[in-house]
Image (cartoon, rainbow, N blue to C red; front, side, top):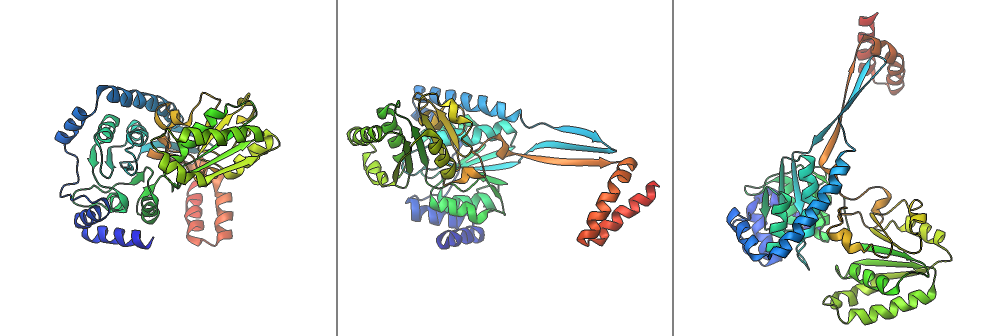
Length: 396
């Protein structure tokens, strides 16, 4: 936080000069202009093969399809009761900043996950920031609907979006995952602008019974652990024999993976728990509240309703967590480190405000006044009390 606080202060005081300084210091990149120009976006399309562009567009369609269904949950309405009209308006947030990590791997999928639901919600201006941004991420951000793309990252990018500089517009809310410095920066600017939530290292929990395929479990655990050396994984099983097979297979499969150097380090974060039955496993999962939760077991639907704390749930042997990361349609920006006990993953809801309104007539005043007068007197708020008394006297 000390490092991040200093970066944020300097960006607030010096603007683009500080952003350039820290970009050179941390990313070893010298920048005068941060924005990815229209010409550079066009060039990026030329650097990405057609099959990749088709995959990005299909993933966008699936994410948009699911987000449209989410949006249907939020509607304007008005209801009448006892001389009152009470209502709700669904209003898009005006300006959104999207952070797209650019660390170990390019993450065009995160551009889709953050920008598509924001655009669908009706956000007027969407900007995206990503360090050392590659052509695939540029193309994904453009296809998703970003208005501007900036090639900056880290705490300096968060500060730039939160407070604005000459080059980077000030936004109302920042969404998207990042490393520990990005997360710390989001925490620091919260209140001056909104954020989605504070996410830590990525994690998966797999609950498996004796019928599960150990090879699928092994590869899914490693698919999570390859994110970075701090990624976490849990295997909860009712069979010691299955666990033994999984351990052996991890050792075999890892040898052929390009990310084996990372997995070797993050394997220290693999926790294994043997349970007597699936009910015990469910209780443990609800306690840990993992980001991703896979049920590799016979009849997984039997236990789905008992699970109440997870970022996203994956049911059955064919439902690889990787599908959720890329293209099934649900969002992959999810709460970690127990956060799903009190919040949920990124969705259309993060890009709208549910604003209430009311209109009260003479009948409503007569109905409500006794209650409001009593409560305002208890709280000692005399002007509250008199504002009601005046209206009451006008109705009688």
